[in-house]
Image (cartoon, helix red, strand yellow):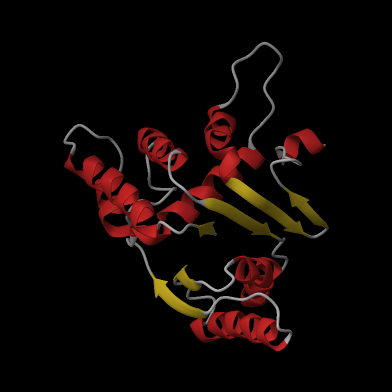
Length: 213
């Protein structure tokens, strides 16, 4: 999840990178994939990743990532909603008295009604408790190649590569996967593992999985 009060700047940055790449006759990579899916982490070349990450560094947003193991593909929707619920209350409370707009990537494995219901349930609960909550909520679902979802896609992609990156022997150059993540580390406000419950923040930074062995 990326959170920003300047979504127009977030969208413009992604569009600029995508349009510049597609307009460059000497750019490598799968142009067809980028036309079809937009600025998507797995389709972007390393040059495109670096260019977009550098744009993201200067933009006003915060990143939130929630993780849990998926032990059975049949429980995908249940797990998705559980992850959403783990961070939803605090995000709605943070949007006190404001208009909260959710732009969510379409997912054929999760019904849009279930996602809307989860968001509305938390909003309703906050109202019933007379707790902090947004003035109103709007939920939009978009699909690739919409650049509204480029930032959260890269946020997740960078973190995933960082966590899976191997250790480097002493004296050897650091891996690109780790350096790319470090460029945006300060943007990650919260990384949450819910099994077992562990919260990683700027004060308690997360480390690659290989360092935990």
